[in-house]
Amino acid sequence: MQGKLLLFCGPSGSGKTTIVHHLLKNNPRLAFSVSATTRPIRANEKDGEDYHFLTVEDFKKKIQAEEFVEWEEVYADRFYGTLKAEIEKIWSANKVAVFDVDVEGGLKIKKIFGDLLLAIFVMPPSVDELRRRLHARNSETADSYQTRISKAEHELTYAFKFDRTIVNDSLEHALEETATTVDEFLKG
Ligand code: 5GP
Image (cartoon, rainbow, N blue to C red; front, top):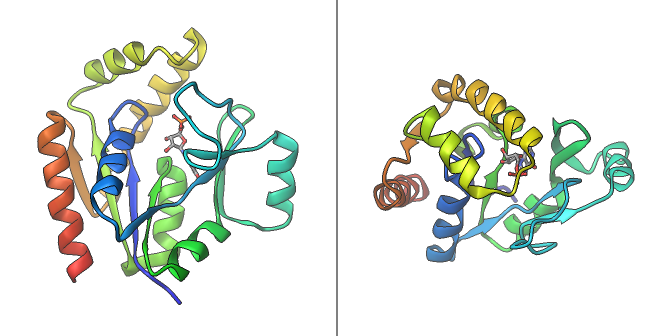
């Protein structure tokens, strides 16, 4: 059985993860598609909830076994991928699958699921603000901070390919707009 899907993309630091968490907490019809990754787990994260944390070797085995809908080497040796089993699990529970993935992967997912999916791009108010947020997050080494900024600037140029853009200037406003947009999509 096929259900609906909600896709959230936007640069690291745009606030998309905060928006997605909030949405999931307030809407029991939605379920997060837990991606697999090879990056190290952060202090506030849980294995199996935020990501399935895998070794590079295990990740590559799953690629071979065609267990991914899409996967990307988002940063060098940092693989991220959407598991087919996650979507099947969510749909069989009669829920709507929610993705928080990078732009490249997101556009692949959008192409596969067409009108069943609403693609939302979360936009930071400016690149300066994005720098400030990524700096404040402090989870990155100087190296990966610069990598994330470069990737973020590149990702911003893809916003026009999405169904909706939400500017995260005030979080409260962005949360409200997201909730309304999602409600409309789920009704239709
Ligand atoms: P982070 O390391 O900050 O959690 O995520 C880094 C980037 O990888 C973010 O843009 C995030 O949305 C993206 N990402 C997370 N899961 C997936 C996935 O399954 N596939 C792809 N292509 N990107 C993902």
